[in-house]
Image 1 (tube, helix red, strand yellow):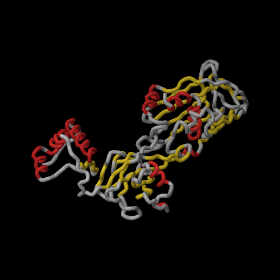
Image 2 (cartoon, helix red, strand yellow; image 1 turned 45 degrees about the horizontal axis):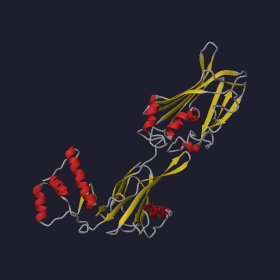
Image 3 (cartoon, helix red, strand yellow; image 1 turned 45 degrees about the vertical axis):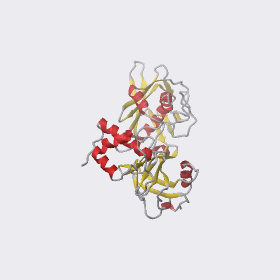
Image 4 (cartoon, rainbow, N blue to C red; image 1 turned 90 degrees about the vertical axis):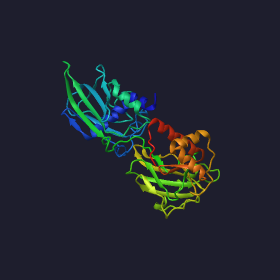
Length: 397
């Protein structure tokens, strides 16, 4: 059972009270008898990432104060047989959780009583100032179970979340009177943004994972990645330097500001810029020119707001080597399996013609990405597999 499942199942009070608090902040349907008012921490309200730890569900009363509020008995009478009900819903999934206060454990409020609470006060199913013991039933619905299974990590997926709370009073004849009902929608809809999951930055080009021996021939490559195009990204390119690891080189590069924010490049640092969008054409100024034969590492970094502060999101580290298009350094011997693969790709006649005119295999370029050496051979074999499976179509004269 991962931490997310534990948190939601434990929620019984932690998540539910957060729900109650946020709901009350936006939509207050109060009766003359009872007033329920809660406020949400501005940090949580402005968060781009909402994690369960942000809601205090995994801290057992010791986390940051993210909600606070009050419950007021507006009458001169003792209000008895009061019950909470909570629902949590995600627009793309449905109802995730239903929590109901057990019938044998109602709570009461004295005439004019005012109760204050924060998310950290709610522990052991008690509300400060209320002596009644509360117990709750319910939890994740079947939809909620599926929701948990679909989540990786501990943050909530990009969606619109509806949190609602109702407080009922039950009469002796069993009839229920709704005294207060609140609801809040947190985030936007799934297509327009809102509360988001862990942001991932997926590099596209140039290069590949470290060790893939990816090569490029363009000295001013287009650096591109997948991610929210509205965010500000920091793009870093560093040169391979001795025995220093790619991680240490990039961390050192991050120690100074990007060059378009007043920073300067370190000796091994070739590019350090803040950009908005998903791509960057390698500039001709403000950077060090890429050198043929040199291997480079690059990474994209951004910062997003979470309820507990700014959170850094980083991409994987990719590498590429700039090669001279006329260089023969990458010529490799190919085995019969690779020869057969090449023949399938380009045809026997074309292959024979290339051999007769002195051509040798150096690299293969796919979507602007150059793969050389053994990696290039492997890419040919992968293409053949896709061709045989019908995933790609080979066209040409």
